[in-house]
Amino acid sequence: MENQKSNSNLKAVIAVLALLLVGSLVYIFKMTSDAKALQTELTETKSDKASVMKDLEELKARYDAAIAENTSMSDELIAEREKVVNLMADLKKSKGDAASMAKYKKMYNELEGKMKTLMAENEALKKDNAKLTTQRDSTVTVLGEARKYNEVLVGQNEELSKTVEIAQKLTISNLKTAAYKLRSSGKQIETDKARRADILKISFTIAENKVAKQGDKTYYIQVIDSKNNVLGEKQTENFGDNSLTYSFQTTVKYENKSVNVSQDLAGKSFEKGTYFVNVFDKGELVSKSSFSLR
Image 1 (tube, helix red, strand yellow):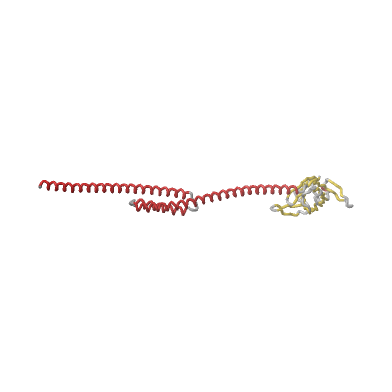
Image 2 (tube, rainbow, N blue to C red):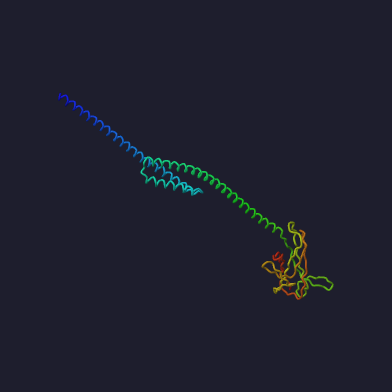
């Protein structure tokens, strides 16, 4: 009977020990599983943190590239980049738990969405600027060509004006001077002796010119004797910065046809030697000749 009782107690002890062993094994298994799960969660969380940080760095690099293009949106792009930089700084300080990572992922997604919107606007702005630049360059080219064409026209007009001005100039020819002695009868006798001369007869021809302006034409005749004296009226006329002392002036009505001009210059005691005769159209010398008296 005692042996049976001892066996029963032993079996009871063994059963208790078995239950304790099973409980320990279950507890150890649970602890091991929890530890593995925690390790897995920590590993995944650390990986998520690195992934979000990488995404933020790429986002910042895209902002940097867009800002470097120096568009009119630069201020707005800089402001958004600062948000990315601040989020990166916060992420580095965070413990990286699941709740925090969920928050950072959400904030990253919002920043990325804003980035896409700004990039689309920036690209549209760049295209508009490129189009405006092309239009401006085309306008500059057209204006440059127009300016060159205008310069050519101005040059041609100046050349044409000069050509017309030259064509309108009247030509003086056949300038002749002769000395004459006056008879009491009024008859004029040509002479080459200074002591016998009473007048100098000066004549010239204004040539025909169909394009010249019609109207009165005034010429100034200058006669200089052998002692460099201006004979006649000795009047002085100013033409710009130049002055002209002349012997007499003659005015002719010009009508595009050839005109013969002749006028006498009276004098006394003409000097022997060579005389010089100059014809001026205002201040411009248009003809000259010389003659001698003995």
